[in-house]
Length: 325
Image 1 (tube, rainbow, N blue to C red):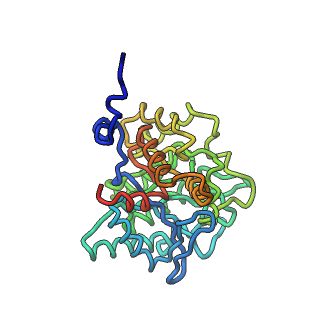
Image 2: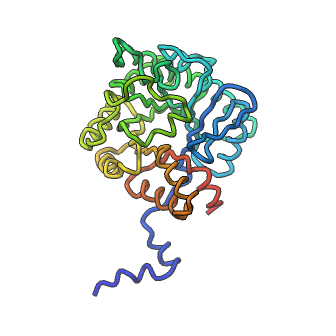
């Protein structure tokens, strides 16, 4: 008889034989930044997630440093929007200002964590799409220079990494060329390589005020039915110069995460998105689940599937509960 239970008998034996561990250094916290002063407002559909004004980001930085997680990914909510999303590439826009604040705050304390700037137009366009419109359709090629300008604005402000999320064809290549032309050869790009047109994004669009005013994003985000295409997208991003590839969402796409992991030597990221987070919180509020155990299981699944980096709204709370373990 093969007695596989021998290594499950005690907590110490189970810990000794564990195959997967959650790396808190591999966790990234999404952070929403908005205009105004002294603002810390909870997102109604995402309990425990807040929108901050730039002057309140110090408390976020302190929490990230104390928890020991890897860093933050910044999303901006501008005061004004227009057809071309000009706030995304304004040097005095909300995300560049947030980056400069965090860089100063960390430097004054002799500390550091990774600051990633999400690069997209959807939060900044009046129509809510991820690129400029031409005849009601998103014009892929006309949108690429604007994404490159957005990346440059973030990197000039001090961003450690940029992450283009629009799913425009050629966006990684356009950004790499723009960064290299200005001497930013050292700045990595995290591609939102396989970003699916998912129903799990609802609460994010509430938080970032980024829902499209007409139509949807199925013409440029991936069809949820396609796995092989996700591999193609990841390999294209790798070929264009991405330093990290991503699968988004995470929970319903672990098969894709595993397949991407097996096809690339690049680090693989997953985005544990707003709808996934909100479902856990809603079930917890109703007393249906043990939140701490569920979150531990979910995060473990991401790393077990092959992720090296997990972008998650659970990052701070999980790390704080784990302490120095």
